[in-house]
Amino acid sequence: MATAPSEIVQLLARADTERASGRGVDAAHLYGAAADLARDAGDLERWATAALGAASVQPFDTEPGRLPSLLYDILAHSTDDAIRSRLAAALARCWVYAGQAKRGVQFSDQAIQCARRTGDESLIADALDAALATHWGPDDVETRRILARELDDVAAHVPDPNSRLQAHLWGLHVACEALDVPAMNRQMRAIERLGEESPRALFFAASRRLMLDLLRGRTDTTNQLITVASEAASKSSIPDAALVLKAMDAYSAVQAGDVERIERGARIAEDFARADGAVVVFAEAAFLWVEAGGHTNARALVETFKGGVLDDLPRDVNWLLTVHCVLEVALTLQDAELIETAADLLSPYAGRAVVNAGAIMFHGTTDDTLYRANEALGRGEQAAALRARALATYERIGAQWWSRRLAQRSPGLDAAKPRQERGPHLHPTAGGLWAVGQDAVAVTGLRGFGYLQELLRRPGHQIPVLELVGADRPVVQESGVGELADRHALKAYRDRLRELDEELGEAEDWADPGRIDALRGEREALLEEVRRATGIGGRQRMVGSSGERARVAVRKAISAAIARISTVDESLAHHLRNCIHTGLFCSYDPDPGTALHWVLAEHPAATDRSDPL
Image: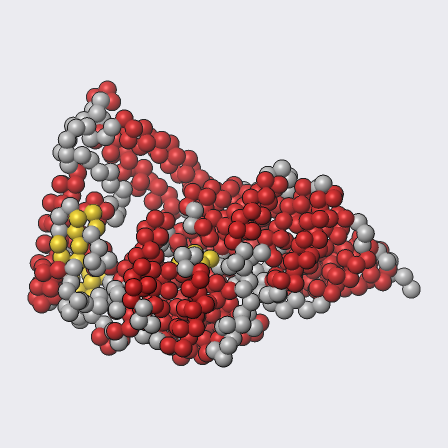
């Protein structure tokens, strides 16, 4: 008895409803049932629709089941280039998501050929997206850049917002890999504009905005962006939304030093990794356990990469992140075998940014972990060069948290200091108090404590005094002679003020209080500079050096802070008097024999990386 078309239509409608509600597993079963009925009925069009629907809810990095055979079956029966292009592209992505990208290359090539024969730009965009997915490995960077540029050109003329969204997401991923900050900002703004059109785009806008915020060390936007992403995900079909939301929470917790949240994220990641055999999630779970202080859990997870497993991993989308995370964990656990194996694998990729698939999260640079690995392996010259390059990269892109984290890892410190030798505290606690000294005595906070803390984070570095003063707000350097600001500078101030007004409007539309406060702070600082730089009728004023004023203010503030410290720990104050140097450039320069391992955050597990946890 032939299947009635209405029965297939009803199954497809129910599957679409389940998908729109975020119930991907249920939708996949319904699409599969509809595909079987359509095949038996010889209904080629609905067979293809069902197969493509099943592919649309495939989670990333999981076993694909019968999906490849379902897609291939209809592909083999179809002669229409438009249908074949969609099916081949879906089959290519299916193999990528299953961790077998090489098997997908022939299908992405086939998708492009079929799409180009049709001349349909939406099909070409879909095929290029599939080709990018199959060329997502660490050795495909140049191919990825070329394909991303072509996709951007094609998608610009496609009315479908999903095509434009994919183009901008690839553009963002490529920009993050290259650490091209202007390109990252351009792509991010484009994704946010698309977020005004659809919940799906809004989910990606919120999640990738948090990625960029965390790259720059901002955690104050976390709750707002997770809320926006969660609400958007509930209104659209995004198979991996739940995992992305959990990653947003866990990695923001790492930077915030919230050990309880890190541990929760580690447990979730470990459970998922063990249930689905997701190799990259094993590595990420181990990294999170290290950050939470869970040595035993982390060791059990990274042990799975021994015995040649790490050497044999496919060089796919997950490879760079997996090896990078394994090396991070091995360094903390002081596992010499894994350190050497991972470092040798990662060394050809020195100078690379480590970005999770789809730019979900920034994980630092390979130079960062390779510096510590080379140091542990006794390769001092290579280690020094890698450390300097990593710090320079972080400074260039404004990755303040990453820069401070690395600066705390003084050469030789990682392997030399056991946990019980944790040094003196200097960090804020509740109620405006600061913990000071070996016993973390609570004292009333002073501005100079913040200056000291910044210097202690970067031992041996000459930090401009204006940078110290500007930690809370932008500071414009003023010359000691002549006009306070020349015409070019004033024009730049006013241009930036116009940009800030636009960004404030957007932040207010998004109801993003953290971003609003930051933008208003920058705007007020610039307005103050313009007011001080101009007199009656807009004429420019002549003043003394802002650097000199900052030098005096910082010296007084640091002197007062050290005096306060001496009331609870005179020996520590004596150490600081000998090692802190102030002037137009300030520094903390301890002798190698007297260097201390400072605790500079309330949750040392998240910042005190040199101690085995």
